[in-house]
Structure formats: structure tokens, C-alpha cells
Image 1 (cartoon, rainbow, N blue to C red):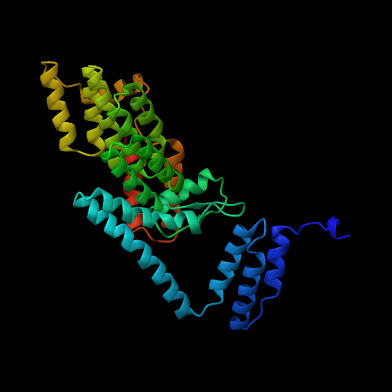
Image 2 (image 1 turned 30 degrees about the horizontal axis):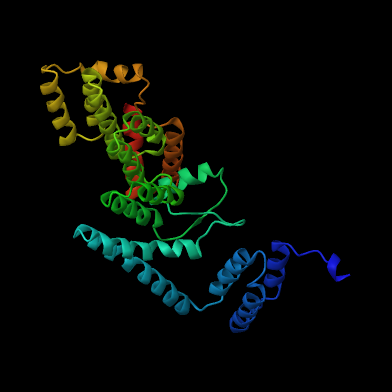
Length: 327
């Protein structure tokens, strides 16, 4: 009886579509258009149409596919570029309008579903970190950095004093890339703006395992140093700023040290050999997590195996691997 008929699974539907494709690409495209129309109101329409779209692009000629990809990329990227331009010029409304157009495609084309998850890692290291988080399960890259788009929207919301929206935008940035350090620091900064120092410290420490670049780690220590300045724990603050300079010999850290010495009326700095033990005494991490270091080492081993040590990525991995092992 018709009412006992079991609805076919996603895989059964997709297998049937695959089985009806042949060598003639024009016929395949015609058939796929018919299937898209057939399943557009199905309970799993989002997943089915996404796979049909993937098969559709596979059946396009190389020139046709190149034209489509270029059109999409150029159309999307121009909104990002315009948004940054307006932001630099201080036109927050126009910047927000352009960046909203840029991220809008993420809500249409790249929604997580029962088949795929999407991320926008900025580089191969972040790709491997996310892959590890997903327990080795493959995910899809969008080719468009939505995480940065949402980060800038968060910055604009902060400038407009819309803290609720800023948090929403930055949390979306994390969704697309949990390792986007710009978004991490912007998010934590909100707690400082609100005068919530304990939350600021907790969030800063919580974010440590998402960091791997020495410049970002230096910023982490400077931010933590700010907390201890506010608490007037001068000696620990000095030690933290001194330690930050191992990662980035920044004038920002030097200026804060001068400020601390003026405030506590003492020119004395901690002995360099005592700095790291002092941080460890207060449970402040002194190098990237073992997990992150292990992933970097594994990537470096693959680079060496493939004789790609002189590539940009190879040199960067070798540099930070040596640096962290020296701490």
C-alpha cells in the first residue's frame, strides 16, 4: 500500500542520481536540473541539492567552471575589500553594509548539515588543528574567509557600542575558525571594556590553547600583564611582560614595564632566570600546548619527508618548532 511505502534515505537517492549519469556531460546537466526540480521540496532538500550542485559543477567544461568560480569569488571578495576600505576611512555604516553582503553567502551556500561541516582555516596549521578537533573527520573549506568577515563586523559593533551584537559576530567568527586569533583577542577585549577583570583574565587564559604563532602568544602575555597591573601585582606583571618579549621584542611590552616601574617606584626587574618559574608558580602557561606542538612536529616531518623544507610553510614550521623547544 502507498501509505506503507518507506521514504528513501539520502544515500539511496544520491546513489540513484549517480547511477543515471553517463559520459555525455550535456545530458548529465539536463538530468541534474530535472533532479534538482524534483527534490527541491524534499525533507532533505538542502543536502540533496548540495550534492546535485557538486555533480553539476563536475560536468561543466573547464572554461565554464573557471568563469563561474571567478564570478563568484570576485563578486564576494569585492564586498570584503570595500568593507575594509570603508572601515579604514571611518565609515562604519558602509563598511558594515559591505561586510554583511560578504558574509551573507555563508548563510546560503555553506550551512552545516547532516553530511558536511564547513570551516575557513587561514593556513595549513589551522586546517590541521581543526581536523584534529573533528577527530580526523574530513570537513569542507569554503575558499572564502568568513571568519575574518565576522571579526570585522564584531569590531564595527564594538565601535558602535553594540556589545551584544559584537559578541554575536565574534562567536560566528569562532564557528568558522576557532583558531582566528584576531577574533579571540577582540572577544576578550570586550570584558576589559566592561570592567569585568576576572572574566577578562579567565577568557584570556582559556584562549591560550588556540594560539600557536609567537606574535599572538606575545599578545596573550601582554593582555595577561594588563590584568596584573590593574591588580597592582607589580612583580608578577613585570615577569609576564619580560616573558612576552621572548616571543616578540615589542615596544608595547617595554612601555608597560616603564609604566610599572614608575607606579611602584622601583627600577628593579626580576632576574631573567626567575621569570619562567614565577609564571609557572601562578599556573600561567609558558609555551604552546603539547597537542599543538605535536601537530606542528608532525607537519614538519611531512615537509621534511617531501623535501619541502625551503618552502614558506617549511621554514615557518621549522622556526617555531625550534623556538618552542628552546623555551
